[in-house]
Length: 375
Image (cartoon, rainbow, N blue to C red; front, side, top):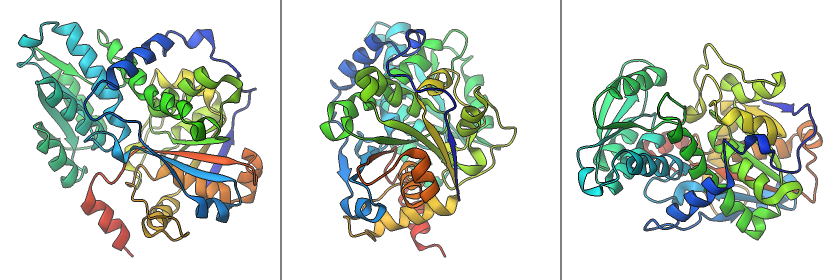
């Protein structure tokens, strides 16, 4: 099943001055200068899927695949890592005195892996809080980067509460994209780091000429930062922006429908676990309200079918392996392109050039293999 909500107001053709304080052009430029100086940096590739495009009856389908992003294997290597570096520079300008600092984060996987990687790069410790349901493979990946991991009974919100409680300890930095008193800059720097992905898309001729951009929602930070930066760069030439999230946790779609940020008392569960949230991030929603043209909600079976089809190369394209959260955007793209009503609503036709941000590669091989083998 696919549920589509369209924006109810005219789309802007330029970046509103009112949003300049959330995602300033200068902040994104500074983030790009820093991130591009890191060892191993290169823009992640745009992968063409010509046979899928042929099946959907469109001119092109492309994937911005974040599985190749540093050692982290997801877009999270951009925002949290940059935010931690900036926070350390503010808190302890003397690099020689940083060794006894600790980075703190709550995660179900990718965010904690990024923070652990960034902490190792900076020569500091990391302590990552994970909810009980997070997979052993993701815990192992975080530990392999030198971080301590503490399991927390309950949900991600319980893990986040534990991480925030740890912030009371001396010489700690909590890395989260939700602003906190005295630490609002970390959330803003996280957005600026994510926006570098939008720069990479705008710099690539194939990305700059996309007609539609599909991006996973979750709390909206990735979608806001990338689509916001693309609007800054391309103005009226920007693609139509479509968010994708699970049907049981479609808080961004509901917020778009209501015209104001909404919250879910119970966001439930989904195969696309990294997108299960209760509310949009406070800094993300004002941007999403401007840049989102449509929001899709898809069922888990849509996501799983697409994950398996791409891994097997069923349309005749080269096989592509994508994690269970990263599959959301391309699953939404494929579902939208195959559904006549959604095609019409989004203006998809044979001239359309569709681009999906695949926000992660395979970040837990055991989970991925089980999904391929499951009945």
